[in-house]
Length: 250
Image (cartoon, rainbow, N blue to C red; front, side):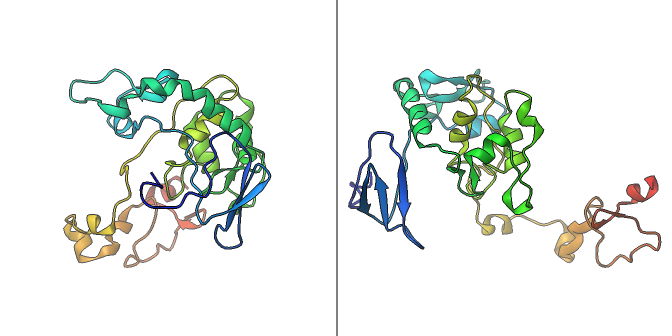
């Protein structure tokens, strides 16, 4: 596809190999198989997988089928239909083993599994919290057997970055499956694609928010609006002002 677009392809590495990007601020070269090749971009294309995001949001059950390329929609309700690659591809089955071999060859302890949140393979498998928390202890959930990918996402933030797991979700699942038992695929949340602020600006606002945008602070469990005086007997929960029911309980 790159060549068809007129881009010069400096290297096409077809087989799994340890590769390393070179450069200070931007990519300047790639090191692979003992040689360096100058380039300004690197594309990693392991394989395509069925896109099941809409099915998951609609509540359609999904199941893993290696013969069709990964997770695919299960029994479809009458109002949902699947056509094309999202339903799975029969020719994809033979590449499942190749994809697993690629991950085994490429993944080392310090390999970045989730680039958005800088989660390494060792962080992922030990369920280490995000580095910015300054806590390198592993979560004991890792000792209790097969993990749910949604649990892993919340504990490590792998899949919660700007791409919302589009670049790492399947790799994380494959790595968590190396012990033999496959965890459920991570769930999806709308919107499934990034939206510009203009799309939200076009939505009508409730009158109270239109009159005073800070009206949304009326969510009692989070904030006290600035126009309301702080009660004399205010209770603080953590670093925030407690809710009326927090205070009542106290």
